[in-house]
Image (cartoon, rainbow, N blue to C red; front, side, top):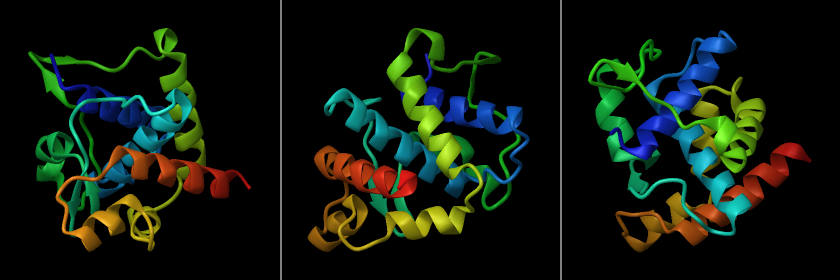
Length: 158
């Protein structure tokens, strides 16, 4: 079975296809997935959406499994899904209302932002990524990602 981070990435790509958003590059996908993860942490009191961690890479927080699946697209829009045995799998939004609420919130707020705009948000001083870089940590801390979610999503809806 695909890693849960790839399933969530497929949900984002499915939203993009349905809404005819054609600029979801690997970088934009990473940022949307990061905001989704942060929102989910906020809504669940700190329960992670998936087990693999975001790492502090040069251009912001990166989920390595998602990076490996879509890196061939480089800066081009992604026009496929992560697949396994010829099948496309997603997280069932009908059976996971917290996931659906998080995805709805992030998608509506950020779907029309460019990858560069989203990257600027994750690179702000005091974000989980900036803190990890400052400490020399490879992996971002969930409690700091959750704080990002509270601040970023609060500011977005204000």
